[in-house]
Image (cartoon, rainbow, N blue to C red; front, side, top):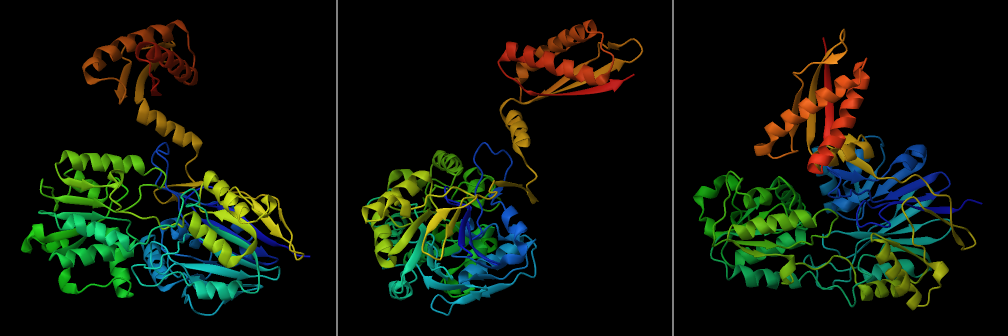
Length: 551
């Protein structure tokens, strides 16, 4: 008899790259398709996406993709997937708006995007049926899914919290969730990221008062930065700006586009005369402006990054100005970048309000321990699957479930690629794992960067590069004295010329003692000699690139 498979392709032991598969016989659906963010040692990598190998090998089974909300770690990998797959994508109105914008950015056209209503009917996908219900998160229009299968009912509830006073006025739909769970639930796959935090997660509404306390004391320009998809936080900033007679200027393409989409769909509310364009700033008193600006994660090249370094063509800082960070610098690889931007802003003399000074300018969108207990009590599943957190969060989630009466064998902490199979008899067991490696994105290239390339980039970044131009007399089998060594990022300029001249002399002497007969051996001997010579002299091992000119 056919089993139901739950496959954690990505996102089960990390905060990002969420992608989960439900498969029954010839029917397969995906929930979410997110990107990850590169670690500092991933030199030159822009994004990390899940491995689509399993989906490719089951291409004919894939019936639909369901996206839970508008954050990049849940939808950002769709452009890469939809280049290969022509399959309908379902999401709420705001989520589909964000997806459409992202596909346009990547020039992916013709996708089948379908809007679902959080209070509407189920979507049929072969033997699987998917019913959405509203949840509360830091971005509006987020949903969870109930997946009805021939084996039983599964609740899939990614990033959520029980916020009774959300900015958009639409809290977690407990009544609908309770009704959907009434007939019994086989399994719950849900967010584990808040499982180490006691209590309930605070409401988004608390943030507005904190923003107001800062803005009312500000005498210069105010720069407010948050994640571009955090429409609720933008709305709060706009509310405060209007209250204190400040115009609002959206600065940065991602912020501008997300605000435009949210406004057009009714999720961001403001009068047009409250807004001033960056191109028309000269007509307005800049001290009466609040800039809602991109770059909350310190991204190199973002608008806030350029402002902090004094490199923006239209925006500059003065000591009377205020910068407010209202985002969590938690995504992998971002903390170091944010710290750098904050330090540059402080050096500029502006008043900076950021994560380390505990001003409650950010609340998590993820449910804490009591939120998790509330969901467990609401759904009452037989089996529990933590998703969207790290290994330690998954273990804490498991302990919460066991504390509420679940047995240890009813909680499945899955690694990427692990498969969980549910039988018609209500059983659950681990199946055979599938391929689930990280795919690195360098520019628009997918999977073109491997560990060797990253190793080379690491050497170039930390040790520098040395180019050796060798003139080789193929008749006499000798290296000419005019050998030249050129370096970048290796030794300091003052000492470089003399050091490289002496190194070249030693290299010529070494090579001519070897009686070398071909250019391949010549290159190998050059690298071997210079690696040892440079390490003895400087303690560093730059990348060495020999170029042989045969005469």
